[in-house]
Amino acid sequence: MLFVISAIDNSGNHDLRTATRQDHFAYVDSTGPVRLGGPYLDDGGNMIGSLIILEADSLADAEAWAVADPYAKAGLFETTSVTPWKATVNACGAEL
Image (cartoon, rainbow, N blue to C red; front, side, top):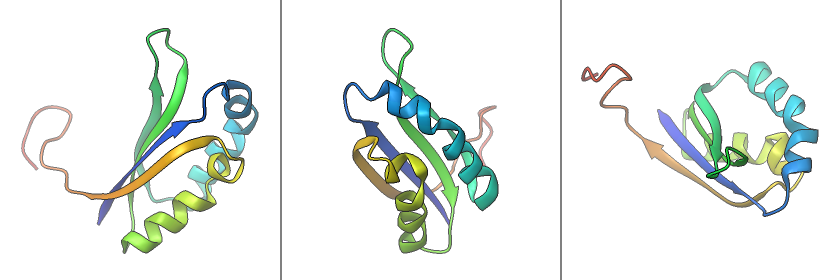
């Protein structure tokens, strides 16, 4: 099952995001469930949050993955939500 993790950074945490970015990427690479992800950007192109689509067996598993993310453990996020999601259109516009 797919889940969307949507997280918004605490304001002024650019340095914390930068400092934990490599740990976050290592976590993503080592755990395996992420299917797509990337930062939210403000009008100036600065990273202000994260959107991650991951595959997990349950909402509890997806939430546990989100809590263990080094970004979350470092206190980067002001808000985080984990929501079940169903892909119906791929990037090329074809139905799945």
